[in-house]
Length: 514
Ligand code: KIV
Ligand code: ZN
Image (cartoon, rainbow, N blue to C red):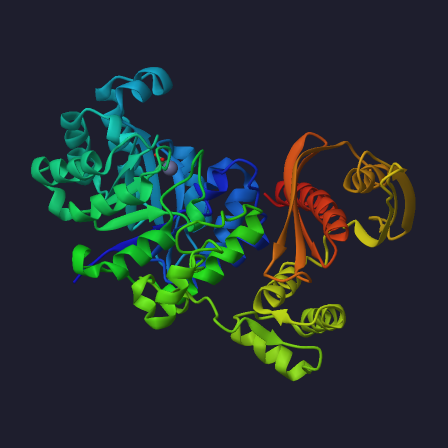
């Protein structure tokens, strides 16, 4: 069967989702999980965007060995230089360079004639080839480009040394039939097309990104690009978990294979959701929490008699554990450590001890500890940066009555190591907490968005809060989990502040070492 390369861009196009802001440690965690998931290529970022992005791409490139790591560059030497700086440590350095080819983009954005665009594309590929063994070239807004011009520039890009040609539907405008036809047109009209792999890159503005991706495969694409959970600019990119499971389940129709390890899907999706703070809609295909829930009596009856009556894929296929109860109050350190290892966590002794302590505290309050609870506890430890300048929640209390204005009191460890306590009221309990914390924090905070959800099922499930705020003008996302949603909210608030402080510290560090 024909092999399709999977190109993941969660850390680049996915990170361009509004409100998503990952730090280097989080990007590295996602990169390692993408490697376990078996993606062929991962786009780790846009090195020229900032020194922090460059550093994150470099760290990923020097860590990941089983997937090829790439970075994005515009068709300018300084971007390609920055990408080389970040990627030269990679096993097989690979560049992704792009320029727009549609009349709208060339006229209004680039202000270049089509001839100038061809020249810029060819020059940038030739320049990049001096450093990178593999250069992927993208025609931004390919789908809205003139087909004859697109075929011409693709031919020139191949002559200049590109070995992968990516044809994005940048604005998510194509129908599956039209997007497939563009690939067929290239196959029929670009004389040297057999020297390269053609790649799809679909946005989801009209909800057709996955269908368009599959149409590209049917018409000769050898590589498909997408993100986990369909993250990405605006309505996002093609969801790779959906593409992977569709190709597997309907191999009779598509007759292709991938290197993906499908039973890593659930874990990858959860990690990305947790670290980006982007919740997964309950009815989302493959990874939504209702994806395998049979609600109607007729369906339940059918599934009990014969699962295939209503189930075309199983939870096990994507790594969803059927027995979700994993550990209890009486589980010992040994069982806990084993479980952490089997879930793929590699924590040092101190982090493991701390995680075990938190597990015990939770087990005292909660009857059943599920894999989702463990996942939350272990991920938090894995990402803890000991040296970070942190505000740490010592305690929070809220006095609430239907007749009174809620009043919160919080004790917080501040960056100089002392404990500060303050109190404030608010229109609701959460606002009272945020107002109190704002009095303790040194800086201007403005909350943009806030939501709470439960991790796992049951009335005693852990609560998770995600907050979007600006701190001294910059936007950050914070997360917090606790058995009580008020405590989770306070933690999420401080987490966003800490992330902002950590990022400024990183920027300072990078600017003094560069
Ligand atoms: O959507 C797009 O066109 C892109 C390119 C930079 C590849 O993301
Ligand atoms: Zn894109």
